[in-house]
Length: 146
Image (tube, rainbow, N blue to C red; front, side, top):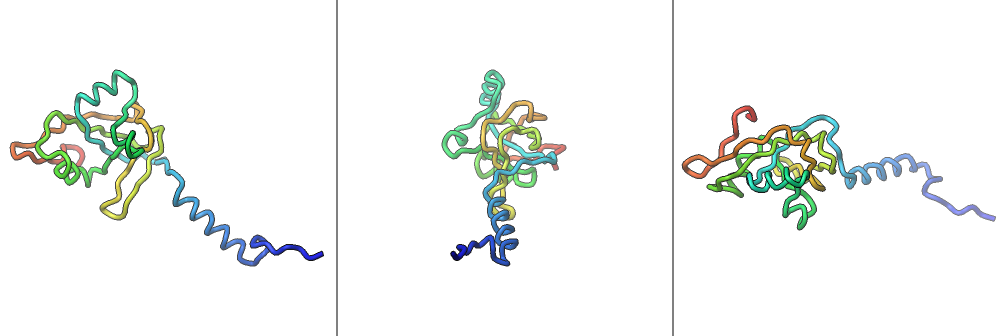
């Protein structure tokens, strides 16, 4: 009786295993083991509500499955594009390694943003800064984040 041929019997099995591992890594949620500062813009009212609940959730988490964040180098562009002139905002300074939900970076290059795929545990927020626009409605990077 002839043995059925298997890809695993081939001389290419090591290469196939490496490809399989690489493909799995593409879709596996990543956890940030090293602390990376990620930022999230929200209203003071939403933040106060989160503190009363003990957990922070957003509309985007419900609709898109994640909480939008950015790196300090992206913050001003994101704020001026999405929140120009809006008052009553705060900036959550989040230590990525303390977030219990999956944190994934999505996109390419400068358009690659950190996203939190689940509710945000409040103990991952190291600092909350008032984040108000200037007299022209534009945002600037807060001192200490530059």
